[in-house]
Image 1 (cartoon, one colour):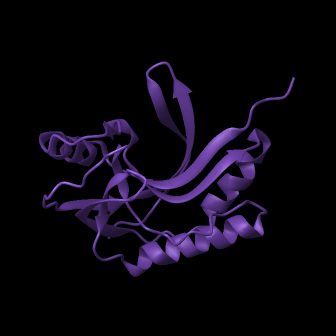
Image 2 (cartoon, rainbow, N blue to C red):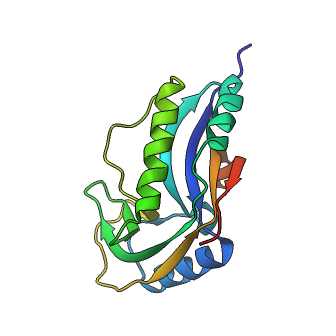
Image 3 (tube, rainbow, N blue to C red):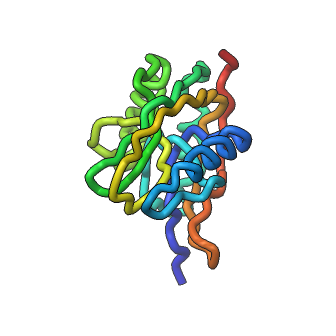
Length: 172
């Protein structure tokens, strides 16, 4: 019997207190769509999709080679993409984030992993299947404190993300 692959992605986790504040702000907006669980807030750096379990060590080695420069990200723009994803994004993206994503993608390619070709648009997903973006202002500071390798797992209560590797970033 073969072991099913893991559904993996690298991301910046959202600290629990910040996730609580963002969720409370979002919920007060009374949005349409399906809200993302507060525990699942994160900013994806690279989505890998299905990866054989035997390749986890390679991904952990890539995590070890990533830049360690921390930074802060000001999340100040709420928008909706045509696919119904309502998200919170920065108006200005720090060079350190661009550098981190570039290095991560290059390391993944060199390791033979499939890398999305779409341009990088940093965001935290607030809701799915939203029909409208609210006219609302936002201002949340996301400190980039670690890069985390997450596994996306289905459970009876919905999707949950489990950290299977984490690499701290230097304080700003």
